[in-house]
Amino acid sequence: MTAYHRHARELADRLRASGHARILAVETSCDETAVAVVEDGRRVLASAIASQIDTHALYGGVVPEIASRQHVEAIDWLCDQALERAGVGMEEIDAVAVTHGPGLVGALLTGVSWAKAFAYARGLPLVAVNHIEGHVCANCIAHPELESPFVCLVASGGHSEIALVRAYGEHETLGGTVDDAAGEAFDKVARVLDIPYPGGPLLDELAEGGDDRAYVFPKPRVEGRYDFSFSGLKTAVINAAHRLNQQGEAIRAADFAASFRRAVVDSLVEKALLAARDQGIPRLTLAGGVAANRLLRREIVRQGARAGLSVYLPPLELCTDNAAMIGSAAYYRLMKDEIADLSLNAEPSLAF
Ligand code: KG4
Ligand code: ZN
Image (cartoon, rainbow, N blue to C red; front, side):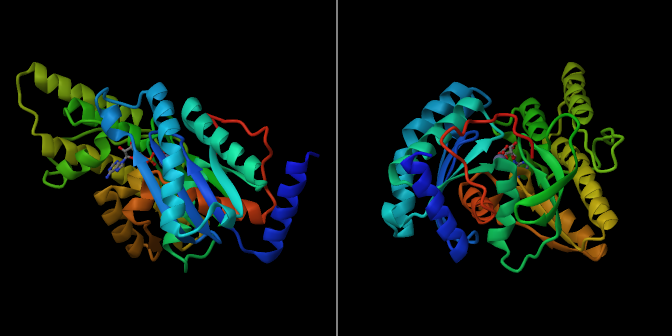
């Protein structure tokens, strides 16, 4: 054991014994560079984010090489900004957390390397966080009263899963998408409507003014009780758009967006409610970028209430990628004595 490992281990043991930790968290899995300072898993002292959306919008999607470079450029000043906003000095940080997967390999590597260097330089414990688990923990920050177990519907650009969260840091995946993620389907359908990247939020806004019964799209069908499939729906919607174009018929974009959004949301809500009901768990939460979707938020609250469930929604700024959620998840890992060593690597396909 090196001097670093000995020191980090001793500090981790002390933090665990005290139950307190002020964590500097880093998130670079996709196109947002983010650094946050989080205390005891639930108190966010600062959350700084540099979005790369404007750059990637020029190319119609995330360009991995550009994402990695922009993370490298942003991470130092974001860390300074987060510490300044939190009003804490580097010497007041107890541990460093970083997303090590899933995500883009180069993008993940920038955060992982940076966090390892920071931890090593300051002799701090390093905590590796699964990005999806981070999304779930957004609820822990937003709802101090939320108790486990609860069911969480996680829908983002890369993942759509239903998880049974027994305790923070301890979950079971009940089901998920068998093909495309919900956010991915939103982004791809947005493209045929000439909505710039990332299409999800703008398609959602457009859909607000549309009639969701104007176009009829196939209901996604899938075998697994808690599974989703969005690829067939996405293809049917894209084909319908091409057909209308070929026939010289104008697409009523708002109606088209509303009809597609309705199909995705109905599928997500149906399966999430089914899972909560089957498990006999009266608490249902949302997480991930798609949790910002207006219709999904309205429907899950409405239908959840009708089913007798308490529904918890994270605020919009905690739905999309941020480092506060990583700092929260890291606290529970640290308290379970799960610390990483300096051989930590990026894991682009890390399972939830
Ligand atoms: O969680 P996130 O920030 O990054 C990933 O981990 O993937 O999610 C981004 C995804 C994108 O696909 C984006 O289009 C989608 O979330 N998204 C939305 C909305 N806001 C973000 N999709 C539908 N409606 C929204 N309002
Ligand atoms: Zn995410």
